[in-house]
Length: 144
Image (cartoon, rainbow, N blue to C red):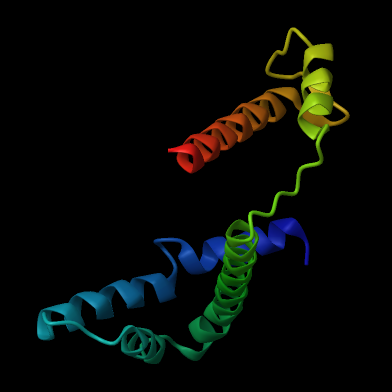
């Protein structure tokens, strides 16, 4: 699937102007008024789905599939990160930071359009700074 088609599907299901989004918002408001103590989230989806025409349902279905797959991807990623974090795992080799810092230093001065092997140098420098901050926090947290 082309990136622009993927973007259209995602924005179509999440856009505030989509038929499904509108139906969900309408049903949420109605059910929250009728049941202020709480409601089943699946019921919102079912009620909203029933309010769509068959054409609207067909259009919304692609977006629902994408939303599900994105959620699944996020859950798998979180599970992987939690596993790695619990085991003290790192993806960095001993000299990775030094190599990347050398690459950034070699591109100085860094402007908004500066690239290093096709990567935005500002993004790389920011990521390195954030990584060092995270490492610093981790060391301070472990040492306290």
